[in-house]
Image (cartoon, rainbow, N blue to C red; front, side, top):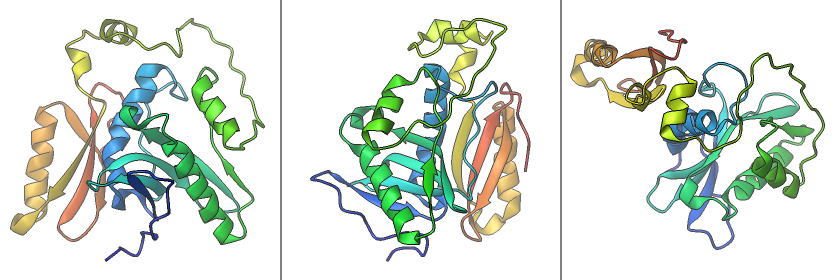
Length: 238
């Protein structure tokens, strides 16, 4: 049985996956891919903004491509409030790229917006050097409307696949330090011990160098915990 937040599967052209809509992305399998998506954006140089990338809000909706094993292979998270919808994050696993997954996701989101009747646009942003994404957007029928200018006081190489050593050097860390991901997503069952056991788990992660960034309650005993690395500079417990 489908959850109330889950829409019926959308048809996909001869693909080994289906497209599903979730009112909140935390209720979808896509949340497991979010840390990987954020790391990819930063390491590829396509991140937007100066600081570390943060996960989408748990109130964001999600269009997810689900494989036969029930796991997500790609997703779009979107703020679906109001007459303009804003895509906040999109990602497809490397082995499933160039197979139309991203286009299927966008068209499913477009059809969902059409069903609402009042939505006038679906908007997104990407880095100026992310030419593959821009080409995909335009092939999907999207129109470039705004360009943001920035006056850079320091040079940096953007849009180049970095080596492990160059990523470490650019952030002022050794390669061993760079092995720790900036965000870690964990599912947790409190069991009979309740909040006491979860606090113990949080303390274990703190000893590993993580701080609780955000917690979402999926049921009285089931939680999704997002931890941030103490080195990312944005460690805020909630």
